[in-house]
Image (cartoon, rainbow, N blue to C red; front, side, top):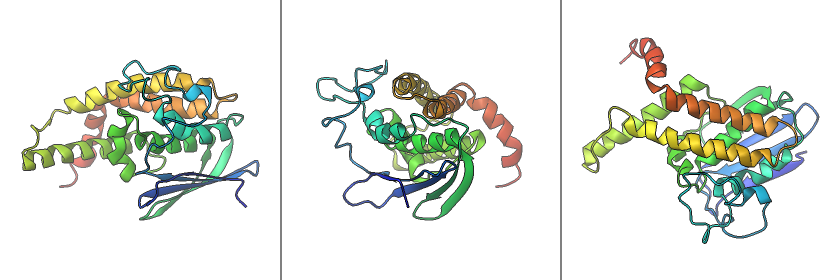
Length: 239
């Protein structure tokens, strides 16, 4: 029996990703994440102090504190983060991830599955900066490594540039300058967000999960050409 079912859903959910967890200590959870949910709770309601917008607010946050009391991304992960405030990052779990198209399974540590959950939640949040990653949330790949993330990210970005060229909506950015700028923005967001989470975590699972997420975005922002260069031998084998 599930010990907790936490749902981030809209009224007419079509794009829902479900994480089912069974930890080695016997705890079980189900997290239902609607990619198209509305941020109804980010302006009102009762939430932990660390979710307040002015608590370690991102230096590049475009939201108006007079209209938005809470950080939308923090509100979205609040309930899940609280479930693991005393969980060590090395504690293992069986994890099933269900999307509309397929299911995935992995036996992994708490840091890894929280990193995956936080990633898809934050990318589909109402944060104006994180929401730019929402196309990746629609094609979520659980537990993706750096190369897989690069392939999906750069591929999605270049498809958008091509479509913009076809429709005449925008001048294409084939040199990925916009992508590098985005990840510079994300680096700032993630560093401040980790400071938020430190005030909510008694052990290290949530912190290490977000640290892993921060490290990944930092690598993407600093080494686009390097990682793409390493992938080139693989890509030359096809097309």
